[in-house]
Structures are given as C-alpha cells and as structure tokens.
Length: 234
Image (cartoon, rainbow, N blue to C red; front, side, top):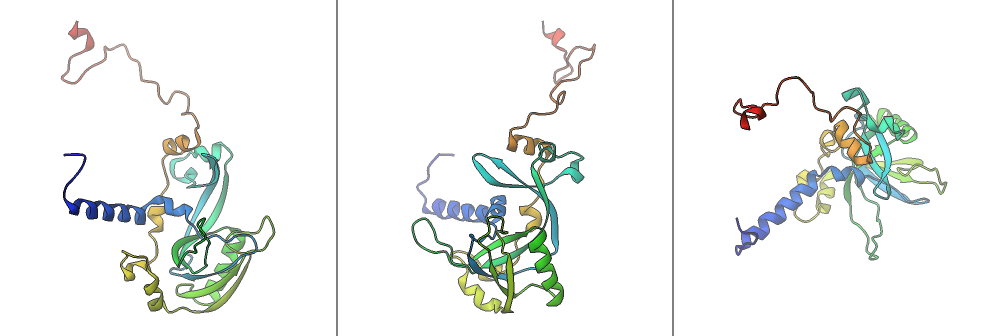
C-alpha cells in the first residue's frame, strides 16, 4: 500500500477513524471534571454513582496528573503500591460539564461529556444526594470549589438545582457526534480498565523483578523450530 492516496475518501475515512479513536481513548480518564480554586460550575449526571475502584495518582513525564487503576487485588502485586504512589478509593460517574472553561487562546468551552472521579468527601456528598433523590441520573447540580489549597477539585460545596431536560442537552453534542449517543454514559469499565504489572512498571520507570527476564537453563541443548538443536547446525 502506498503511503499516500489520491482518493478523497481516504481523508474522510481516516478522519472518522481518528474521531472514533478519540471517543474510546483511555486518555479520557485524564479529561475528568475539575474546577479551579474558587470556581463555580454546573454538571448534569448521565449515570448514577455505581462504579467504584481504587486509583493511583502519580508523577511521570513532568506531570503529577497521571492516574491508573490499582491492580493489587487483581494480579496479586501492584508496582504503584510497591513504589508508594498515592492510592484512594474513588466513585465514578459520567457527567455533562456545563461549566465554561477558558482555553489558552481566550475562547471558552461548550458542554463536555466527562467522567467525574470522586474521592472520600465528594463521594460521600453525592452518594447522600443519590439516596435522597432516588438517583443522580438526569439531575443538575451547582458545584463550587473553595479557594483552599487542599479543596477537592470536584467541588467542596454541592447544591441540587433541578431535573435536567436531556433532550435539550442533545443540541450541544459536538460536531460529528450522534446526538443520542452523546448523552449516554461513558464505558467506564473500558476507560478505567486495569493494566498489567509490566505496563505499570514501564509507566513509572520501575525495573522488572529480579529473575523475571532470566531464561531457564537446563542440560539439554536449546531447540529450534523443526526439532533441530543448535548442535545439529554445526
């Protein structure tokens, strides 16, 4: 296959592939709902809080905002735990973020679909309201973050606003998106899927365990495919 094409369909097909890849990218877990210190925003839940994991936050590639699901109870070991990376139980749901966030070029964002990842305080606040309101799906909230340095980025104060009109939200779907699909919850089990110990060690630059790369040595000559030993080749 040539490295270029003279068919316009190629451009449109590859553009769609990139869009589909972005929709399903695990990187979306880093595009989570956050507020700046002292900021107030509004969110609409597209799902209840019913997805719970233990999550690590760690520093890598010059950024402290790296997140991975803890695998201690899955693989029996977790390189992030072994390297003393922060770990917290979190509750996760999907929201539409109606907050106007300013971009570097001075423009502001429109509504965005994001995961909201809640640690202890935030999870308790919303779980309490989930029980009181008999569910969070379709509910609109005003959330505010205090100016305190340690204030939770998901908001330190929460007020229930009203039952949102999800039909109206469809009109804010980004260009190229199916409007019905845009107001569906994210596939959290895919976005937050746990990695293998090898992948996590690579992410933080940790060495493999001693002996993991060693080959088993025996008294028999090494065999190649076809049943011939190295000794048979000389």
